[in-house]
Image 1 (tube, rainbow, N blue to C red):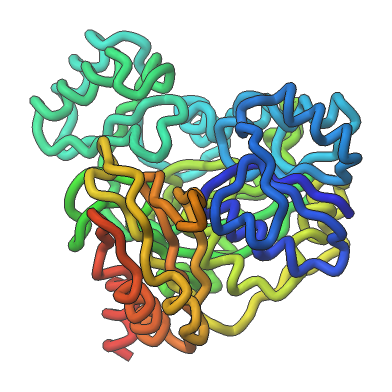
Image 2: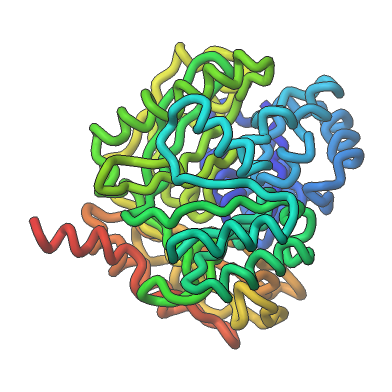
Length: 426
């Protein structure tokens, strides 16, 4: 099969890595890809949002399956465009991708289905939002309704901070994502991610993971797209994973089908494990980044087979299996991220780090220039390790991290701290 993977980040490198191992694969293209992906796929200089060019390329190359890695093209309807052009594609339709495209839609859906989540209100004007925020207990959470690259969530510790968050969102700090805001109660607990596949009728569980969203050690600083992750997540035991399917995923899949907008693709549940049980933080319509990286190195089943079953409506005929290992990834980022960051610096030590057993280095924001690998993104590399425990995987990952560098590079040094604390208690 000829496959076109759309995207350029660390998630897409991990997906390319897993797809490249499939016995069904005959040719893998990636648009636009990065310096790491080009080692295992043919990268083509087409942007993920250039729908016309992507469709022309898929038709020209007679692509058998298009795999759409990230949320912006899914929410904008790339899946629909591929299918209308006769190219099979993974991921939800534009209508179904509202599960990620609108936080307000998801909150309303939870209310209608009785899915546990934080109490909330939706606002289309700053005055009403400010008035409501002033009446709520602190801290509270202010969210841009639409896509904001993982940065459109602000935990306000004071009234003034809530006001600033509301003003900035309506003023366009997150582009069109802030045309509406959701204000919700702050949920106390431990957050984890759970993933499943749906073909619109059937749903199959995948695995759990836990990521670190704040930029600095100790969960300090602003939210990012994710600074590291590990899988499995000890906080998501087997009983909680069953609850995730029965109380969250299955009712949602059934409700979307009943509304005439069947959901086919990856379902990402952000769950807060509270004292009263799991509550939904958010739905996403693709693999998480960097959670995808730790899931792919643990995946035992053939990814391409699973994605085909998802697209073709036959998920009930397959079983997804996992390696009995732990995976942990550390995000190496550029100085300034998640704000304005430096770019253009040469990355050193990649080959030496990659020689460590159990290490896979997934590129997120890199380019090759004159034979050298250049840091071009905010999140640049995902240094991913496997081991028998989180402690072992983390030690291996940081051993590799310490061999890699570029001017202004930084990372968190405490990835996996919750899981390691649990290991020490047992």
